[in-house]
Length: 182
Image (tube, rainbow, N blue to C red):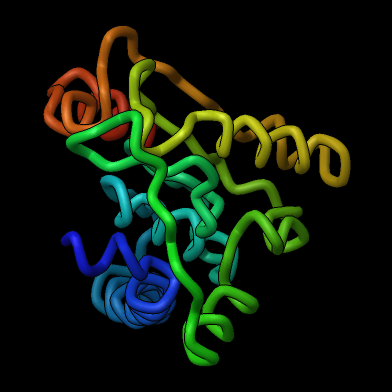
């Protein structure tokens, strides 16, 4: 994990991109196998980052639950999990990682959300690893360009929880599951 975070853009952006594209294959399978009325996706931390990205590129996704996650792959202000005072230098991307970012990062593709999928960000009040301001900026940017889409973005901040605490709290998990089955 130390290696991935110290070269986040080099190592993690390709993982975020591939996982986003692979998730579409899973959705294809789900549609073929179950013919659902609506597709929902969710994830925790990086999985939540992917869930939001999938909603941006797959029009079949109607609801997203992003638990302790961000719509901005640059993760401004991301701090170390074990030391909230240490802001992580994320390094530089490879050309491959940059391509994934350029095509899939939700924050820089607001138009992909104009169709207004319902998205909840369930975040910890004391989470300094994933700054809740990232979700706030995403919603505000959507409000400026696509007000109907912004109206579908819900941001919930759970008091007294840091990144790991929120990720392990059953109340936060239940809030995500409740959102997905509405």
